[in-house]
Length: 201
Image 1 (cartoon, rainbow, N blue to C red):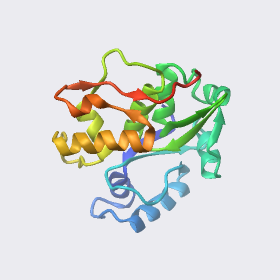
Image 2: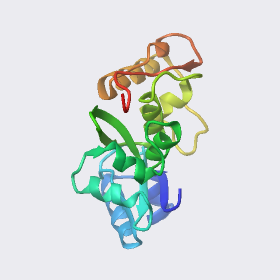
Image 3: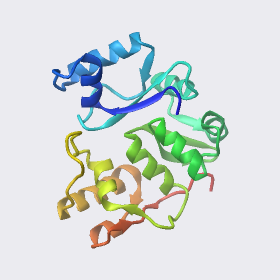
Image 4: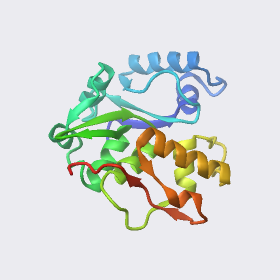
């Protein structure tokens, strides 16, 4: 998506400040100020996990009005407004995926409005797709754990699957996002997410 870029916090620090820089909240804040000077803006907070991906957008991007509104404290948006922003209905896979690529997850729903929460675009994609209803194939457990546990360093090719991580991911989905994933507690390689609500329903 033009004018939209996602990197882990630790990657942003090294990309903007130099490879020799280590990640701290202070360094990330400094990195963020440098990005603003270059015309890139973030809706994410300064504090967050080192391996969380955050999205930066330019003022020319179609995502910028949404990012600016969120930075200004707005959280509830009309579905029709979001459909125009992402140039596709958010109640479709294409629209839900584009919203996720901007770093926004569908957190709550009320009538013709939804509440957005800025989050890692990998997690946002999974959350938003779950809000569309049952999935045909489900999702990779490894990808799910990586998106919600934020444990994969850029130097590692994949995360390890353990019972503790399965349980922690299932708890995070249920407690923070109101999404059930009982499949995580079994031995399946692919799992389905069951949202407590469906967008547009």
